[in-house]
Length: 206
Image (cartoon, rainbow, N blue to C red; front, top):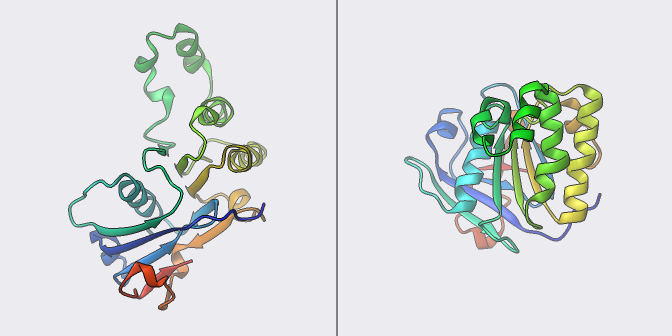
């Protein structure tokens, strides 16, 4: 799957967590590829980076976090963060009191079945051009279903022009030829940043 023309850079000027992880500030993350996987050990900053990207794209202010974004061709309102643990519909069945059929399904379906239904039925309903941020979506999925999920992610990119960034430990996602991996355990210190981003940074993730 070729990367489509799209520019997205996040420059973090200050961040309490990343500073604690010994990332040099400013750090610049190249998010131009349409299907990105964030890789790293537990505590390496994958989820922090994913949530930071969500804040930045929505223009939200967070204490201790100073950032600059460079994005072309993006409607900032089309940003959707899904945390597989926090946003699991099975843990929020009360939200479906007005949909008895869905409520019954959630009460009997497994975690994995619910996750697959999100990719099959719910995410495709989001607008074309959505930036979909996923935190460990492989939770509760077998390897075969992770491959199904990868296929559905690729379809969202190809058919609906989604941009997807995923924090994951899944070898199925990380080793797929169609995904672009940013390894937070192997961040490199170098000054390779677009001139338009301003002051050159020291930590560049690409």
